[in-house]
Length: 307
Image 1 (cartoon, rainbow, N blue to C red):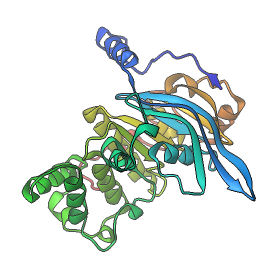
Image 2: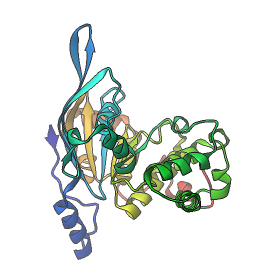
Image 3: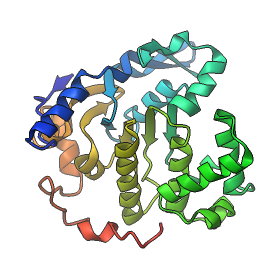
Image 4: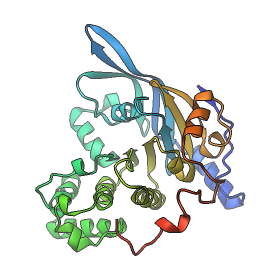
């Protein structure tokens, strides 16, 4: 796997910026993955879907895993979160806060997936039971992880609906089908972050959304990450989101991680031919800090609009 030279130009060249970078680099990783492999059995033979995957993510950092469809991005995320179907088997080492996930009891793993690892999926509608009100589902989530009274749990739900930019009372009383795609994805984000996870896995969270709504959702993820300090594993094929928000990037092809590095370096000077082709096939990217032709910066920062 090729790596670009890691010089973080995304942080300001000030003492405060250098101190933040130094603190992040010295902090122990929230998630560490070493030699992850995922295989499927076909006609008494084992076929590798993902192989030799190794990376780490620290607190407050966003790592984007990019690649074309079928490259193994989502399989990698599912293996980390313990959501692989029974037909797939994983091997290798996965540590969360320096504790191997293999050491966790089955009941602890269930708690882990909600309390320590939050998920946002591309199928936002599938994140909710269609015939239960949003408030009922969020209340159940809160009280599963914390011993709160109904009044306390409801206050927590209202607080998080406000944090994701939604009108709490209306959304609380709504059914999923009464909300737009962007609203559902915002509710899903609130549900993922309410228990206070140290890691958020966002698996193609904008794929099913229109361009404008997807940008708003990604702005929200970045803002909430900054506020909570959680690490984010961002799975995507859209390099525009990566350019604006990721700290580091890992590129996957045919189940392998072929290149990784700082986003500010890799997207400008990719070392691998596949990465260069991937960038060439993406919509035109502007220089850092400037909007590109596809997304005028002012177009998706209208705070008065609900999505």
